[in-house]
Amino acid sequence: MAGPLTIRTFTSNVFGQNAYLLRCGAAGEWVAIDPGGEAAAMADEVEASGDPLTAILLTHAHLDHLEGVAALAERVPAPIHLHPADRPLYDAAPQQAAMFGHPLRPPPPPDHGFSDEQAFRFGGCELEIRHVPGHSPGHVLLYSEPAGVAFVGDVVFAGSIGRTDLPGGDLQQLMRSIRERVLTLPDDTTLYSGHGPPTTVARERATNPFLVPHFGGSRA
View 1 (cartoon, rainbow, N blue to C red):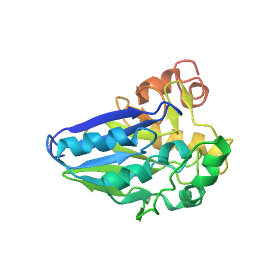
View 2: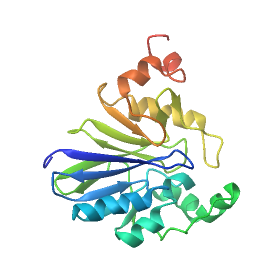
View 3: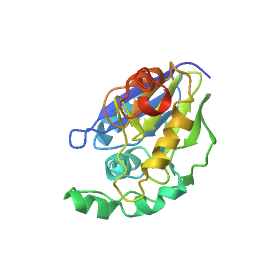
View 4: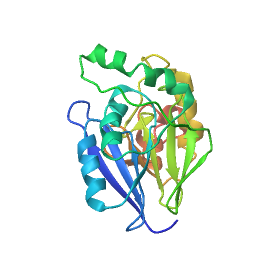
């Protein structure tokens, strides 16, 4: 990896959703993950740095994770990446917003489709794309082994897991994704979730009440 991975977190007031800016190296390229309600602040950060935004990466296509895509792409244009299985949800973003009575600028069409185990490179850094369906059909996580971090969207949270009662949700599939694609990461991997504080693989394996009866935690 070319230099450390800088991580900036932006939490929206309406949905409490975490968006992230990652920069590769002290002076390098940015990528945005799940731009939500604080897209203007994300654009301010990128513009102030003088470094380019090279991609907008979406873990999935629920409203709270994409509501800022249009605004961010207008200020600092960059290609949008989304797993193809979530494209129907992405195209239905205006309908999602209407359900909540929430204003939305429809996002531009995605430019690229993620694939499982794809290596996404920016600057000298690399993120491994892992398909983790269950919360939504095309949900992915983004893992940096050198940095010891994974951006897991709404798959797992500190002490909880993603909901599966929305269209395309599947509880058995979600649990399989967590078991096979999240808990197989090194124990000290920091998990940056779509809501709430960061946690670690070891902490969730040992204490998450939704996981310990199934995955060998201390209370299993």
